[in-house]
Image 1 (cartoon, chains in turn brown, yellow):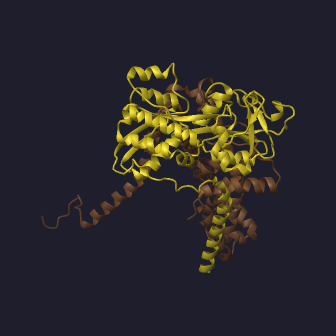
Image 2: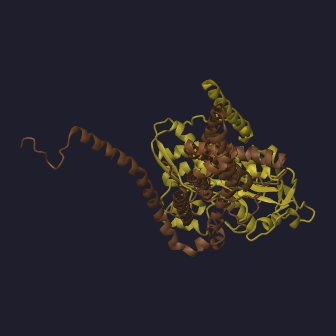
Image 3: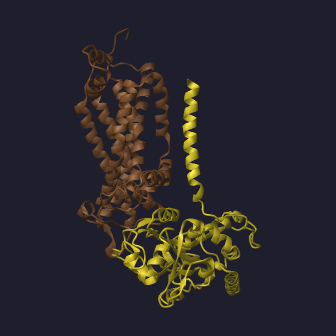
Length: 308
Length: 330
């Protein structure tokens, strides 16, 4: 045999070790994919069984959601739930987008290192507060003290305004930190070039750095929106439980996630149609978030700018 | 610098925690001062084992669960399962011999259920274990003193569009109502809709529904037009925040719910007795016998733990007699 080299590489201890590591990394990547598939699968059975009893059209286009009632009062139109989810998310984003983006810009471009060292941990603490705390904060403080007493708005005890705004506050840290990261990643040379052309700091931040970081900003917004759409506890506690199609933010609304939580808390018999609605609504929520994420990937690609 | 940062984070989280604790203070219903009432029964001993299958009314369910929990403190080897198929569903299984004890929020029906049990040879005893009452409550600002069952029906019936009390009685305020009630899975919902709207499960749909009675209390006490119904014990826990409404069943007398008026039945129609039906066959087993004796002996403590209205002393004596008869017959 001698020293003739073979075309097939013989496994050495080192390559074997690398193989193990690669398998490990692959396994880690597979976990999330497998979980996603398992979730879809677990939702599928009840969803199919549900659509055996309720026509798909009635579900997708019906405007009355009263699955828990009996007889002719029962109705499975999911639109009020989807609407409630989007409506609450919209209120949240109206708060979170401007505040989040502005604080991101501030932290990345304007804050002195000392100030940033104080503000960032506070933002992180905010992001770490359990949502149930936010929920009771909205219900027992924000609704009565801020909305009613301080601002004099005649809101219901459970209302979309309070839940939506607090939902927005929950999302602010997500958006702010991601925007800050995206803008910090813009090469310093762009700022220097801009300054060299005579632009001041604000012009540089808004006309040069922010557009350059746009793909990251878009990703931040979509992630924030996904977070808001799936949020359950705040809406369950402070937003109420009435599926409603309306524009009045002082009334109570029910979101899809809150419906799932509220319904599974009651005493519904396994296998009944009410039980299946939990899975169908879960599936709807899953599909909605999936569409949002696919949409965001396209957006991010579209606005991506690469600097070498 | 590091220290400052840590301190700040601590201060912020501390402030948040404190705020929430302060807000949550008044959430707990009162009456938690009597948890030391679980004396062991003479029939206990702790060496009993086996399983006890209970099913039936969802109103009695929490009572049976509380009873099972307290019973297990002295008898950890007895496994008690509590189902909530509803009173009718419970009797169906009971008369088929599938369960040992049936929970019921009404007496067994002579014309429908008794024959089924008889045919299957299932003998049983009726034991009243607690009382149930529904409170009608409004926000304090909506100081309604009395309402008739006809007015209640007008507000709560299927298809009702009533938006204010002035629509059912012009002399009442026209504040826009915020309606609160239990979810459709609850025994309270079935009871209320059955008595007021004439058919169980029939109700207007556009009210704020929650399986969590504390949330109903929060809503009614928080909205100017708050108007709702829930189990009486939840009213008791938050009496200072709510306005209790008396009910006139049509004879012109207005009765407010209280432990007494629910126990003696004068608060009508929203009060009723709750029963457990042990089968004679099951009563022959020591663990079932011990469990029923425990339930009757500890009924008030269990009722308190389950947040329903307890038996009167007289009712307890009757229950003991009924049980003693069942035992001698077994």
